[in-house]
Image 1 (cartoon, rainbow, N blue to C red):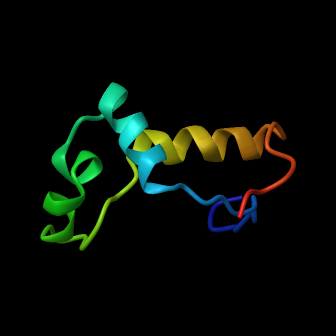
Image 2: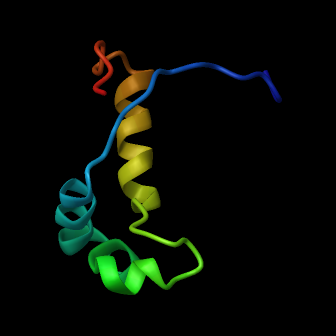
Length: 69
């Protein structure tokens, strides 16, 4: 239903995981370089939208049954 919120869980991405994914799939500097990201509008590394979408897809399909912390 439009506007309905569905809790899917939580997931922690390390800086190394963000950089590893971005180096293959979304090589923008604020995903790859901690120093560049620190002075960006985000103030630090940011996970790629594609990366977050892939993880959320796993949650919604039940493939991530145990959230990582």
